[in-house]
Length: 281
Image 1: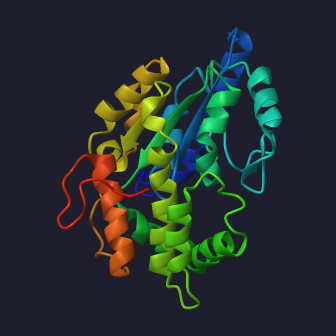
Image 2: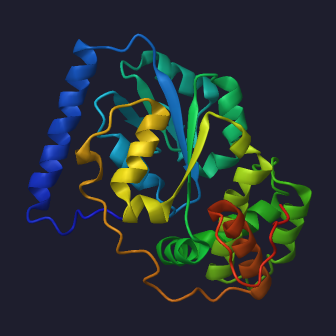
C-alpha cells in the first residue's frame, strides 16, 4: 500500500486515531442509519492499489468496509457466498458497503447480476511496477498459484477465454520463474476488464494506480462522484507517489512481457512501443 504511514512521527498515535474514527463511524451509522445499502466491489489484480482505494473510501462517513479478513463475508480471503454478501449488505447501516475480493475479480459480472444496485471500481497498474511488487511481496506463492490454475484446468477461472488459458498453460513450465508467474497473474486479472466487457457497464469504473498516487485528489474525487458519495480531503492525505517506476524492469519472458504490454496499452490508452494496437484476449 503506497501510504505514508511509516513516516509519521507517532505511528501508535496514528493507529489509535484510526481506531477511534472506526468507533465514531459505528456510532454515526447507528444514529443515522441509511435506508438502503449499496454494495461496492473493488477489483483488479494484487499489488495494483486496491488497498489504497479501500483505505481512502473507508474515510467516508457513509461507508462500511468489509475487508478480506472479515468473517462476516469472507473465509480464507474468499467470499463465503453471494448470500453472505447479501446478508452483510442488508444488515449494514451504511449507505455504501465495500468488499475487496480481488482473487475473485473474474466474478465481476456475477456480482453485478446478483446486485442490481452494485458498483465496481476496477484498479489497474503498469505491469512492470505491479509485477515487481507481486514478485517481492508474494514470492514463490505466485508460482504455486499459477501452476494450480493449470493443474485444475482453470476450475476457479471458468470465465477466462480458452485462448488466454492456453497461453498461460503454454508458459507454465516446471521451472517457471517468480517474475513470469507474476506476469501471467497480472495478465489474467487485468485482461478480465476486456473479456468480461466491463467497459460496457455504467456501474463499472476503472482507475489507474499511477493517477491514484500522483493525482490522488483528482482521482478520488472522480471515484466519489461515480459512487455518489461526498469527497473529503482527509481521504488522500496519506497517499504519495514514490513507487511509480522506481524499480528495474522485471526479467520477463519476451512473449509474456509483450502480451502484458498489449493489454496495458489497451487499458491505459497509451501507445507502447513494439506491441499490437489491439490485444488478443
